[in-house]
Image 1 (cartoon, rainbow, N blue to C red):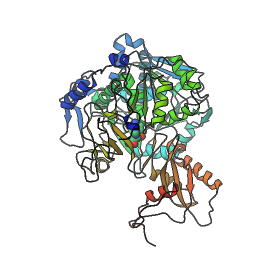
Image 2: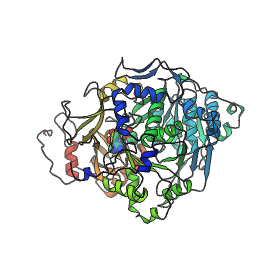
Image 3: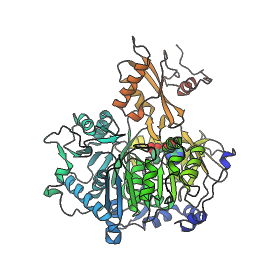
Image 4: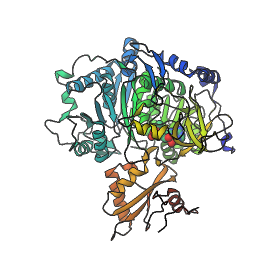
Amino acid sequence: MTSEQQEVFEPPDEIVDKAWISDWQAAEAAAASDPVSYWAERAGELEWSKPWDKVLDDRKAPFFKWFTGAKTNIVTNAVDRHLKSARRNKLALIWVSEDNSKVRTFSYFSLNREVEQMANILKAMGVEKGDVVTIYLPRIPEIFFAMLACAKIGAIHSVVFAGYSAEALGTRIDDSESKVVITADGSWVNGKVFALKDIVDEAVKFSPTVENVIVVANTGTEVAMDTIRDHWYHELTRLPIAKGHCETVQVDAEDPLFILYTSGSTGKPKAILHTHGGYQVGTYTTLRYSFDIKPEDRWWCTADPGWVTGHSYLVYGPLLNGATVFMAEGSPTYPYPDINWQLIEYYGITGFYTAPTAIRTLMRFGDAWVTKHDLSSLRLLGSVGEPINPEAWRWFHRVVGQGHCPIIDTWWQTETGMFQITTVPAMPQKPGSAGRPVFGQQAAILDEAGNEVPDGTEGFLVLKNPWPAMMRTLFKDPDRYISTYWSKYPGLYLTGDAAKRDADGYIWVIGRTDDVIKVSGHRLGTAEVESALVSHPGVVEAAAIGLPHEIKGNAIHASVILANGQQPSRELEEELRTHVAETLSPIAKPDTFDFPEKLPKTRSGKIMRRVLRARALGQDEGDLSTLESD
Ligand code: WT7
């Protein structure tokens, strides 16, 4: 181990003494001795209208089932159960607009009213249990209402990040066969309107399934409305169909709650499927223990609900714990570099969970932007999405956390639904290590042949035990579920990440081992970026790789073979960036380009990304003996 890896921060006593888990060794050992009972006990803290017959059914592994036979609904636990006590009047959600001029707040009581209203409208549009609804909304309260309304009536939500292009959105709408799309006229991005409704119009133009589009008025932008298909949300809410109580449908624990498309190693995004029962137990427990969530907390997770972090730890996890959720529409630096610190100070935020890329961006502005604010309400900080470099960790700890807030680094994936490697606040923190497998989980680091590697050696990170919030399958593609996650090492879940373990059992995640690039914590497949590039008429072939980037973690570098007659130029690079932004998403824009004569390939025709990376970094290209011969 290097000296950096020996750096350890012990949590302050006042945090440990008050935490749900103070004696973490005992809790870890108890869960390890009987993970299934551990999860059954956690599930017992939530409401089930019919108890389960079996906690874990592994007869058809790796198609694991949890809490089979039970009836429940995540909304029963995230909303309804809080209405039965004085908690009904506490704030469930505080929302602030991008320019910090508008604030909307909802108690649990009024959140329920909003969810009922949206659910009534969906029902009136013919949405039934098992139907998929696509949600393409910015970070505004209606995204909470929409997700919870779908869950309440047993429909499956498919949230698409409101920054994806019409093409990407259209593919996801069609693949999921959505009948309804919920969107807004626009979203605010750094003071400018991003025209969401126009993108939806383009995406559903040839959609065979979409019958209704609900449009939330957010930016006041003028949009085209199809008289039959499109409906303003505020007009729908005035109709009698929107009014009155809406019962939360009790579904099977294993009924689907949502699908969420994520990038993999091929061009086609994977639709990860999560279910009501296990997912609620997993997100409730992990947020509770790792971030020591208590009802009096004001919790701010900066993630967008378009990603899994937003699903699990902005919407569901905190509501399941009866906390107050804080959500801001804007970016971390708009309208000014201390907007986050101002909001933390004003709203008394106690837990702040964000991404390394945001921390690095804010660090650049200097300490004074932070220290001029009173951040004494903060108790715990969190990081997610990519490995956090120790320098950013220390700054976050020293300046934002004033030296006394533990930083909870959380390693997990869209597929895992909940944290897998993290710490609880009572554990010592090591900057750069995500921590230890969550209670009830075991991880291993394997070599190519499947043997565990010695401590300190890099290998493939796998998870050994099933866990309640695990994905159940890939929607409509069970074979790919097996081949992607369960084939390399049968019986073990392949994460796709490389990692090392140290002598204390802490795991140090290094990064992806497959064709996935994490750019500013966002997950992109090289194949998606390549097909976006190739759809430009001037491009014959393209290869995308990730290169280290100071702020983004990784940035995309594209090697592009141009069509005859095309010349490399700055203008062409800019045109290709715009093209990728429009056909995939602005987050997928390549930072840098090169325009070689041909791409290095193996004899079987596979692009040798290792060689491209070495070239782009000006390093030795290594062994080229498997290069395709002319
Ligand atoms: C991939 C999953 C689930 C949260 C959002 C990302 C990387 C995620 C960490 C972390 C090191 C991390 C991994 C993982 N990753 N969190 N704390 N430390 N790496 O979800 O988009 O499905 O991406 O993000 O490479 O496999 P996702």
